[in-house]
Picture 1 (cartoon, rainbow, N blue to C red):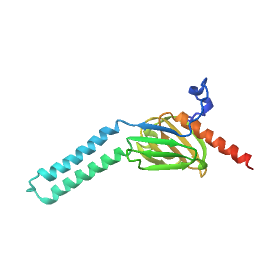
Picture 2: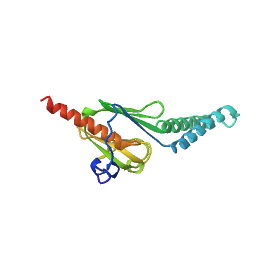
Picture 3: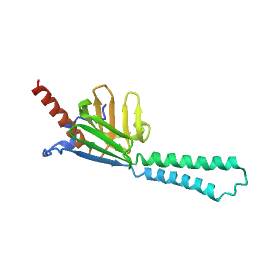
Picture 4: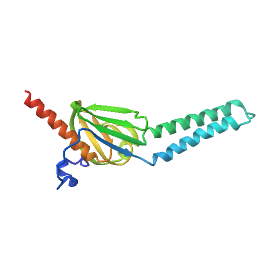
Length: 192
């Protein structure tokens, strides 16, 4: 918990002029190193195709078929597994925080702000803390979408769960979420 800072204690927020918050905030985080893994997956895929097309098939069908299927399966798993988490796009609007991974936007997670109890800025989130890149779950830490090391948003939900996502300019996202939570709480007490 010491890695999480309260916004008023964060040194970057001192002396800033308060700007109006946008209605919709979007942020991204990218991991260019995963393109290298995607290239390895494409190489495995190409090797499987080359084995299937250029082989004379005289050494036996079963070993060659296993090699082709193995290369194709490994290539597809590596290729699509890495491309799904090359980048993450985060959107905060009046109703929810939405996280979309990869080029197709899958997996996708939408968390209504009505379910959020608290939003925190995490200055240093690393894949090592979560067991690697991707969509992660750790007992006691909750769920996370980790595409690179760096700053992130930590949401504490009403049911006790925690959700973390690495994204550029996470501090602004946290400020916006907190403002929306405060506005909803103010409306809730004013309506009572």
